[in-house]
Amino acid sequence: MYKSCKPLLRLTALALAAIWCLLPSLALAKSKQPAAPPAPVKVTVLATAGVNGQIINWDYQFPRTAEFGLVRIASLVKKERQNNPYTLLVDGGNMLSGSALTNYFAQETTKLPIPMVTMYNALGYDAMVLGDGEFDYGPAYLSKALTLAKFPVLAANTSSADKTWAKIKPYTIKEFDVGKEKKKKEFIRIGIIGISAMDAQTDPQSHTGLTFTDQAAAIDAATKKLQKSVDAIIVVKNNGLEVNGVAAAVPGKFGSSLSKTDLTFEKIGKKWVVTQTDTSSIFAVTAPPDKAMTDAAWPYHDATLQHLAKRP
Image (cartoon, rainbow, N blue to C red; front, side):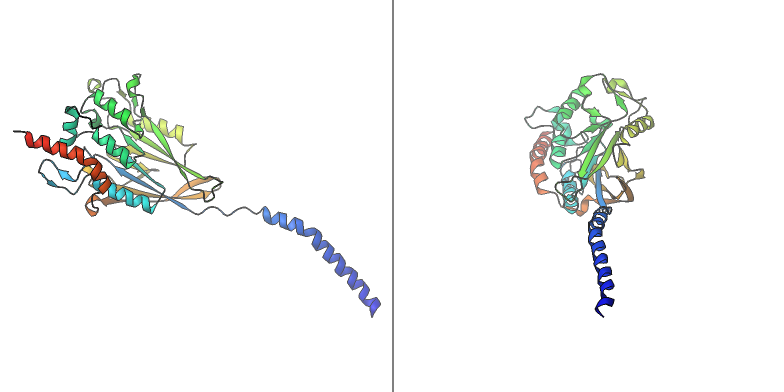
């Protein structure tokens, strides 16, 4: 009985030895398994356009409370940012002029800084596009506004040798660090191209030092420069925007509605790819005026009301 068990014991020992030798290899093979791709990421693109100097929810033409204004938009923007940290905010232009408030502060000497740029800085815009309305108070006023702006001012279809307009850029890039580990950064990069409604036929006398070029050619040129370094491209125009080739909801005039577009990104290989796009409008009437923005805007509004009251 003992002799018959001896070969079996030898085989068992050899098998255990083989398994023991294979264990490091098995562990190494397991460690080399590809990591699971990161979870999809949603980036929210918010946009305004044609705000036309309407900071406060007040109609200066028919003096009464209004259902529009940047103070209402501010409430919507802050809510969206709370819901999603990966949110960017752009403006299609024509915001610097257009109301009794902006008219007053463009004409009068005051210690208060330019109202619309001050409010846009406070709300944290990521970019705005140069519109025809930005020239209404003359090149000197616009130049001062550009200096004050803490956000990029875009117009890919412009060119100028005048250093006055050096801050006007064709595009900008917004980065979001979507990495879940503190030591490892993972970026989604979005290119924002600005296109002004003005073109080569625009009267050069009213836009001193600036030349406007073909819009389609400007978009193509900016896209070629951006496409290898970003994961999506937004084209912002004075009358709306395209988000990665999809026409987004059009923002309401005077800050009456906010355009919202959600981009769902998935990591495919080494690149983040947009796999879904959803766009909608959020109406300002649904939001109360933001208190912080209202407080910041009140000196401008109060001064405007006092000025209007003195008119014959």
